[in-house]
Amino acid sequence: MTTQHQPKTGANDNIASIRLSSVYLPLATPISDAKVLTGRQKPMTEIAILFAEIETEGGDKGLGFSYAKRAGGPGQFAHAREIAPALIGEDANDIARLWNKLIWAGASVGRSGLATQAIGAFDVALWDLKARRANLPLAKLLGAHRDSVKCYNTSGGFLHTPLDQLLMNASKSVEKGIGGIKLKVGQPDCAADIQRVETVRKHLGDGFALMVDANQQWDRPTAQRMCRILEQFNLIWIEEPLDAYDSEGHAALAAQFDTPIATGEMLTSVAEHWDLIRHRAADYLMPDGPRVGGITPFLTVATLADHAGLMIAPHFAMELHVHLAAAYPREPWVEHFEWLEPLFNERLEIKDGRMLVPTRPGIGVSLSGQVAGWTREQAEFGAKR
Image (tube, rainbow, N blue to C red):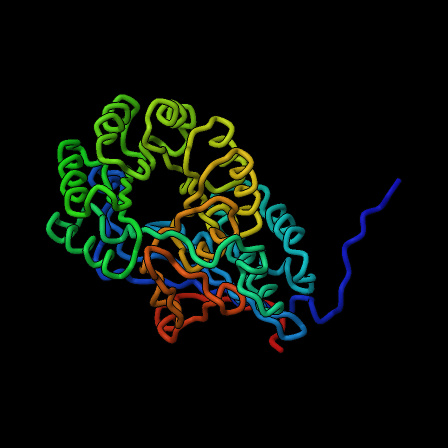
């Protein structure tokens, strides 16, 4: 009989303190996609951010974050606050072991959803700490395949945006050097969707990268019709045409149409992504690092996706995903969303349709002075050095 022993390193690597912050980032304009137009949700006016700041006995620090839209912010903070003490005194190097410790600490509430999203902030902080200590950008620590990633803009194409403004937004994105534009579709009036896509395609030209996103608002017959009609516009992908958990329906669309199918952003576990992968339900898988539970599970999803020959296009949180996409073997896309920029002092650089991977250690971001004014609640654990 063998006994498993916990890996040992110096005491300086032990986690000495953790600070959690619940921050609410206001949005300049209420945001509406198809879920609002179909009455399922209200316009989004703010984003709840869960920050985790971790420091070791030796003084190494890491910053991580997760987020919630419309609802869930207080729940994420409450769960993180409850499980955070389990990390005090632990070796910060053992990231995978600590992820498992945290998921089992809250096992009664499951291994997906809010529970994993809360863990995501800790996991990202630990990877940031490890990369900073190595004096490497996160992408380099993971093993980068490239120093820039194709990027597309979503924030200018929401359904609350009038068509003339949408065209102006698209032009501004092109001028900034962004390589693709994504439009929201999924309105109750399908003809209005088609008109918007057709108008933007003419505006950008046939060769410019254009994507659409239905945000899960079509049923299977509508998705069949819309995918058939949208084939003519030479789209990079059609995103979330069906419910996020309809693997069989997405697989049927992926098999039938030339235009790639993209989905996965709403999933919150490796197991849920595996269901998409094994059904061949996506040509582009869209994992979200914070939602899936951090970098540790994201890397598992990426390995499974690569083995299946899939492309990836991580959802939201470009400050993190530019690093993770750079470490993916197949050429990915990263979603350009400037919404989170006020939280950080640093900015990502865009050039010739691509987002440059930061050369700063770790994720390469630090909290801006504005964050304090948006902070509603904090909790601290352990002893500050």
